Length: 367
Image 1 (cartoon, helix red, strand yellow):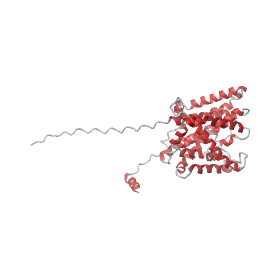
Image 2 (cartoon, one colour):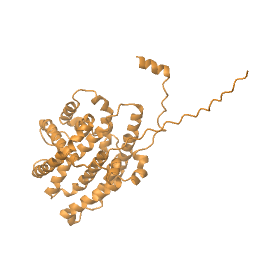
Image 3 (cartoon, one colour):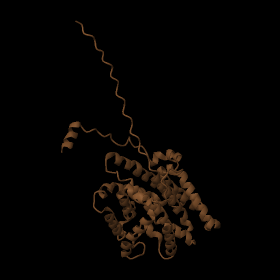
Image 4 (cartoon, one colour):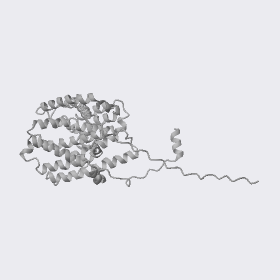
């Protein structure tokens, strides 16, 4: 007796897994980075205007008290995932080491022309102008896993910064003095969580930020003829600033507290919704690295020589020009044109990782 033939339906090939959705960028942090880089550019544009203008000097001192701390805190916050894995190290090389070498060389050659110093050497150990931030961020991220595992990381980093002010012998190699004195801000960023940023984004914080900034400007206006703003650069020891050594130990935590208060007020004013400038937050490193050429070129080209530039109208115009220029340097077309030097693809440089045999993985997991 013949049995009926059962036809097995053809098995359909499994559908490929859908790609995981890319994490959406937080508009608040992109807005904060854009606002911070605009303040950085404004600060550099105000430098030639400080002589003879106490108001400009006060605004300059006020902005320098918090704009780089804010930028560094946000950088530390986004460095929390750095764990030293190969892909993280590759990103560290392509995103920091290569741009540092390129722009350190470019700024040296540019400075030879603007400062009329044809014999100025190219030194990768002595960061020129604003390239110090790349060197410092490289060192900070390398040590991030350590700071995430010690107890009381912020007080410990603050202690390191205080000791650095006692050591004029640290020298200029990789601008280590500045890297150590700004270290507490980066470590604080590593320690922050989203709920901490939500605290400063409340309406009460925005309202309180108004009198705080007004009071800070009044203090800065009073302090202009009485103290040097070089304390906010964090690049010199107390002895190099002409102060007793114990000044550095005292000033470091005082400035840290003042800067944190102003950073909180600054972040309180940063909008959390998507705006026209939100997309520019992804290109702030481009604006940071490129605007220095404009700032140095403006001094060399005599843009500050007309008398009207030294007046109130000139200060307003300079501010608007600096803000507009750095905004344009953060735009997507500039990023696409210069990605090969700021964010190069260095896949060809590194060896491909050999997948670990399953038996070895099981043995490691068992241990």
